Length: 438
Ligand SMILES: *[C@@H]1O[C@H](CO)[C@@H](O)[C@H](O)[C@H]1NC(C)=O
Ligand SMILES: *[C@@H]1O[C@H](CO)[C@@H](O)[C@H](O)[C@H]1NC(C)=O
Image (cartoon, rainbow, N blue to C red; front, top):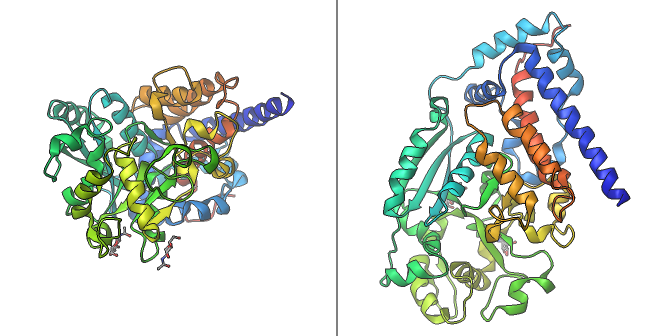
């Protein structure tokens, strides 16, 4: 109980100083954080203020912090600093974006069926608000929902339109028994297996389940693609941190990857490589292409698999472990990482990067910490100030959950959001390349 109190106290102090910091920033030039954030993308375009983190792997980024120069920020943000105000304004005025963002586009795929629409919009929103590079959304959905997405995304504020593009596709299976694929596990879930076949023009992709929330720029997980060695073509996180108590090691009746299996809710894919590689399996010794492998693999294992397409992925990477990059648990953070004591070391160190609310925890009361974050992001109006309408409610709503299993560790859940917000501010305030005013 005592440590709990201490943690809370530390967290509250950190939260308070962060808020002070944001408000001080706002007071300095009365611009909203939203503009700050838009401005930062323009700075990227100019190429002179690329956020230091974006070029790094999450591990490197974690080592490099803190990059924040509190002294420098104080200089620029104190309303009493007569020189700071005009300087910031001039620089900032120049940085305001016009036209599209130049540079690589990141690709984000989701498959949405049934009642997951609101969840999907919330996920897309979280991807967009924190990210730096432009994102192309690939949304696979049922016929009836296509217009819902089209209308919904068109309604997002105009100032965001340079930051994303989207395509909406019908659910399609290239295999013979499409109906059977469609009903495997959950409606539509098996669609993701066919992404390499369906998105022939796309080189690489991040697939996420609809119950995922980004708590830091998607750019950071995207940069892991560059860390793949010459044989790796996909990246996933383990299904459990403690193999002994994981589902696969205890119950699976089919081969699976590693000691605890893989969770496919967040999956990086180099589609070019997947399309060009032969996969070993128990079926034939020579190996099969991804496209030719899926159907026979499904036929062979369909009576043994419990989690549908995730099990098929586990079988595939069981036989081809050298093709897989395992990223740490903070990139796919689920209730089991905190419900029975904290067991995700990576999240303890650098905070949760991607939250994964499996088993519908955003919609029931089993894990209020997960639900609190989801609700705040869902309600955040995209045109509103991020400090007031996102960060502040995130903190207060999360603190309401400190007496729950996962709510005990607010510093783990909110660390990346706070860091991302600081970086946005830092870019606005420390964009000037000229020396600081004396
Ligand atoms: C994916 O792999 C292909 C082939 O090895 C490579 O040319 C491409 O740069 C990779 N994509 C990314 C984003 O790393
Ligand atoms: C790439 O990494 C994987 C996983 O660590 C490993 O099994 C594989 O041998 C590596 N490939 C090369 C070419 O080093």
